[in-house]
Length: 297
Image 1: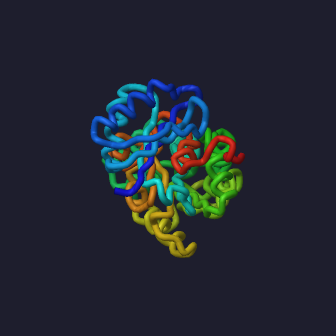
Image 2: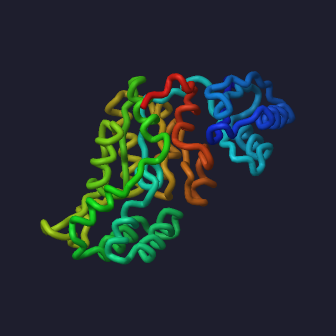
Image 3: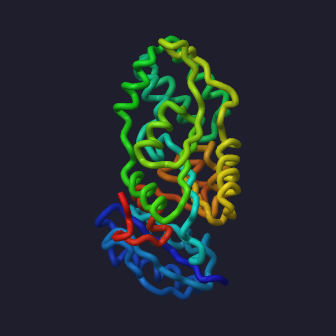
C-alpha cells in the first residue's frame, strides 16, 4: 500500500498533543505504522504519515478517536497531495453567506428564500427549479440592492490565503457558483481567482426581471467546469482540488483528486471523502502539506 498522510487541523490553538496521541493509538490499533507528528502550524495543524491502512479507514478511525473535539482529519496518499487546480464554490464557502438569500432580504423575503436555499443545498429540491423559483420572487427589486448586498458580503477566513498561496505555487484558481456573476466577478477580482463561472441575473436597466439567463449553471456544469479547466491545463483530475458545501457541489467533489466538503450541509458532509467542519479555509492548504510560513496573503 502506498504511503499515506493524515492531516489534523483545528482552529488556531486548538490542536493538542493529546489529540495526536489519541489518533495515533487508533491507527495503530488497526495495524497502521505511523510516524510524526510533523507540525505544519504550531497547535493548529500537523501531519501523521502512515502505512498499511487505507485513507478512508484512517479518516474514520481519527474521527472516532477525536469524538467531539473540534479537530478536522483528512487522509490521502502522500504523493501528489499538492494540487495544480483549485475549483471553489462561492456561497457559504469562499464567502460566509448565501448571496441570493441576502439579496432577498432587500425585498423582505429572506426567510422564505433561505428555506428554499437550505432544502436545495441539502439535496431535497431540484437545483434548477429552486433557483428559478427564488429569482422569480425578486422581480422588480431595484439594482441598487445588488450593490448593498455586495458591500455586506464577507470573505470566509482563510479564503485569501488559499487562493494567494495556490497561485504563488503555480495553481490555476477558478470560482464556480450556482449563484450570480454580479457577485462572482467581484469575489474573483478581490481574491485573485483566474476565472469565474456563474449564472447571470437579468434586468431591465433599473430592476431585476425575475429571470436567469440560460443555460442555468447547476450540478452538472460545476463538474464540467472542473473537467474543462483540468483539460485546458493538461492536468489529470488527481491533480485537482474542489471545495463546496451544497448538493450541487457533490459531483465535482467526487471527481477531484481532493474534494472537500467545507462546513457542508448534512447530506454533503456525509457523502464527501474529505470534510472540514471546524477549521477555516487554510485547512485546504495544510491538507496539501503547506506549512504556516509558506502561506501567502
